Length: 614
Image (tube, rainbow, N blue to C red; front, side, top):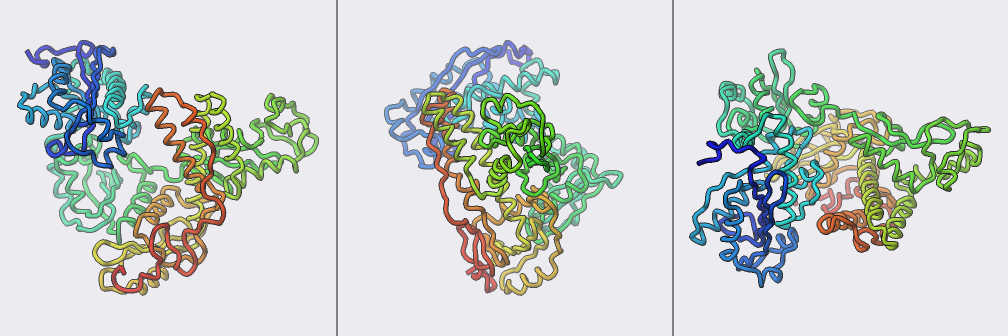
């Protein structure tokens, strides 16, 4: 009797969650190196199976780096033929669960064929597909296992090892099962149908009727806008081939339910042809911000971000605001992230945490507990003058601007002391907070450095012997064009500069530019192969900025991953490592006057003198 006939309640279903590590991505050409499986029913773990497997071949270095499984580790492990019967017996009578199940099931089916073992054809549930069916993209932009494990607060962090990833998938499965009850799903067959609904097999009638909307659209890069009955913009997207991309919305390739609903309402598709992908991406951001289409999830409010700034008063304090002023730190995606950064700064710099406004002369307020602990100078009761308090304010300003990193050194020293004293959990917490602050400072300083430039002209090879050209002014794309193969690029550059729109810088670290647009431009500039053509003032990051702490941050990330993959608790090796700021010394120049500087790792711009790359 089948599961469908039984209508098995979910609480009675036995699931076996499987994860495999392999030598590569092909079930036919590569081999299994590790198997991990966890059997669960009714929220309880019934058993586990885990073993390394000798693949009988070498393990590529990239796979070793990803999984940590070396050839030496599997030399004495059983071959797959000895492992497969035990695994199939462990899975017998259960629903097979895997994250991205086509991968794992593909390897298991191939193993059965190779060893003349019949494939038992168990019901298969893919947690990635189930997550996409249950969770909307605002809550879960990604359905990667690591992202879902973080979303559901799983007890196990994925580490690219089979048993750990299987345990993490169990946590994700249980989190998803808690959600499906609200959708009326009570039985196994309903659960499998829900997961299958995330992947359509044929276009809907509404999709087929709208295919003509793609007729006449150009095969060119640009932005497309779906419009509804009232001419409102329903959705904005971008593509390197507008016609091909828009046509895909009317085929089985488009599986997103929200987008299918949008297509059913669309009556027209408008396009904006762009010079290249960078211009298309920027225009997409601007159009989403201008129209706020209901079916676009991201970038609908490009100027709505959180910033951390010092208040304008005699005794400034750190405040989280929406509108940045000069010297603000940000942008942050959430108020909570900005508050966390503020707390980290306050742990290293004695700026006050209280919110009342304090008079410059003869303040009479009571001192707080922090003052009694020596963590605040107590300007509220007159113990600290405006001039004395200004020293702490200067430390904050210097930290944000990258002129000094003393607060980071203080915080890193505390991490080291906590680790050396055996307070590993506390050290790990402070380590992660410092790493987050370094990341926020580094991003802010990189974005601000680009937005400060009055003009920057850059070029990238277009892959066909020509160049993609862009003029940037104060963090905005001011003009874009191409110089095709055989066309001298410098005259095109000069013409592009003349016709580029003027940009009047605004207030704040980004000169009024949207952070998302500045970020898009920065990523384009930092891609290998991009060359600077013209930059009238040096493009530089501060030598004492957070960029010099990149090594410390990477070690912190490694230590966090190591702690999570092991006992879940930091050790002296991963929590209390000594603080090293990395680079110091001279300013790290990224581009210089006259167009002769280059982005890191790229040739100088004076090689752009002919019709094709040198």
